[in-house]
Image (cartoon, rainbow, N blue to C red; front, top):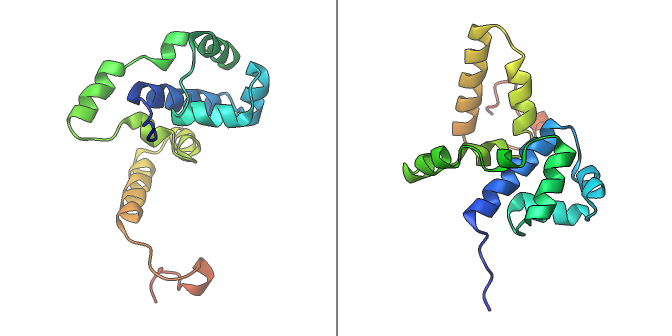
Amino acid sequence: MGSKKPDLIDVEVGQRIRIQRLAAGLSQSELAERIGVTFQQVQKYEKGMNRVGAGRLTNIARVLNVPVGSFFDGRDTIEQVELQGMDSPLAAMAQPYAYRLLRAYATISDPDLRETIVEFVERTANQPFIGGPRSERSPSGRH
């Protein structure tokens, strides 16, 4: 039997669990302890590798203090985005550090600074990594 690819809805529910867990300030281990599973099981839920049953999802929602429906809200919009050939915004939010970055960004009140930060991140994301460790590069990032 070949490896089974995770169902897209299971992946999305997992991404939403991760986002809500981060918003609640819980580690995977803390969530796992509160719902009675191992942290490895929470990892599998968040990656969509294991389907979350209705009872377990209800328990997760209770621990995270969100309605169960929040794990499915906006599904039609996400499907439309994906049909246009774009990545799901949830996939971006579920990336390591993305929630922290967005939370910090949201506290910046200066619109010009916000724009500068977005432009910096976009330029940085579009540039290939050149050179060795930071300590070996010049301040401009070039040799």
